[in-house]
Length: 245
Image 1 (cartoon, rainbow, N blue to C red):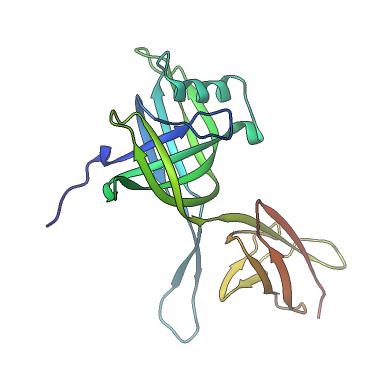
Image 2 (cartoon, one colour; image 1 turned 30 degrees about the vertical axis):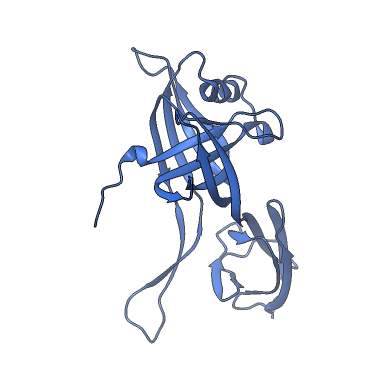
């Protein structure tokens, strides 16, 4: 039987701990927590087919947020500290646990944990309450697991069952002699292709493992077919030089 999943059926918790022991607190008093997947597409037209073909090649998840500031709210305090003190890098990272109450698992619920960069936008744009807004932008792959929620629903614990880690790999393709960027170079990774932009750059989200047969090609240049890269714990920059044929 079909059953409507209400908006409060998926609830977000933020780790506010300053130690290695997580402390997930419910993200309360938010007026917006809206998720966008921001899928990256690769489109092309094959000469023997009608119309365009499109594949999804990656995701750059983003969560827009807004909240009315409440004293004593530890999640608010964490975000205000990042915003007011203009923190950057690792100091601006937060872990968010999304609990799906529509999917019970034993005595808990299916949940996904991911690290995001806090990107503040505006504050104080309401005459009724002091507000903050911005976005959480994907900084890591996600971990699937089970969340146990307290009786009052305000705190949660998380047990991981499966890690789906992805990190951005930025390919920079240049002409070997002139060191100028090559636009439209095709990078093929395990059967999926990506094209570099006008700056010779293509950024791809790849799962954690080693890749050894990456192919880079462009008309007028000698293709490279054995490029390797190992994705493990963070973003990677891979520079590639092509020789004119």
